[in-house]
Image (cartoon, rainbow, N blue to C red; front, top):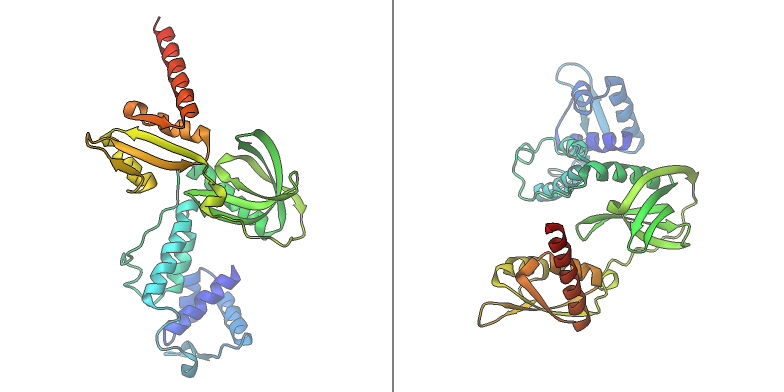
Length: 305
C-alpha cells in the first residue's frame, strides 16, 4: 500500500544521510517513477526533502528536520517487530516482517537475530484460520456483512454479522460484531465458524461498544469444585490454575479447589486425567461422572464380547 511505502521512505530518510531513488525503488520493489511520485507526495505533506542531482547526490531530509538518531529506539523497534512477526505467525506469511525490515533500515544488528522476544500465535487450525482472518479483515475494512455457519453449545445456526473487531484472547481468535438475527453485539469464536463468506451487502457503521473481556464476565464461575489428584498431575494444575489451587496432602495427593464455569467443560477436563483424579464436590456432578464411567465400562465390556 502507498501509505506503508511513504512511512517506510520517511523512516529511511530519517536514518540515512542520503539515499538514491534507485536504492528506494529496489527496497520497496517499485519503479523509480513511483519513488519520484512518493517523494513529491511527501513534499506536499510538508516534509522538507532535498534532492541533489549528479554523482554524490541523492535524496535527503533537511538537517534541521532530522531527529538525533531515529524515530524509535532500538528497544521500541524490537517490540514492534515481535508484534508484527506474531501476526505473520497467524497468516503464514512474512508480510509484516518485510514491512518492519523496511522501516528499520540502518539498524543491522536489530535485524540479525538480536531479538529477545518471539511470539507465535499460530495454532493447530492455522490452515483454516488464516483465510478466515484475512476475510474478516477485508469485511471490516470494506464495511461488508459476513455470513457463516456457527457451532455453539445450543446447536448449529447460520449467522450474518456486521464485523468490527478481530480479537485474540484466551489463546483463541474471535470476531466482535452486530448479529442481525440476535439484534445485538456478539462474540464469535473463529474455530467454530464454517463456510464464512462476504454477502456483498455493505452496512453503515454503528456506535460500537468495546466487548467486555474480563474473565469474570466471560467465565463467571459458580461451580465450586473440590477434587483429589494424584501427585503426577501437579504440573498440569500449576500450568492451568497456578500454584495456589491445591493443598499437598501427607500422602502426596493434591486437594484441588476452584471455581468452574461450565459443567460439560468440567466433566471433559476431569475425564482427561483418566484415573488420576477423584471428584469430591459437587455431589451431583460426582454422580454424573460416576454414571458416565459406568456407561463407558458397559460399552467396552460389550465390545469385548
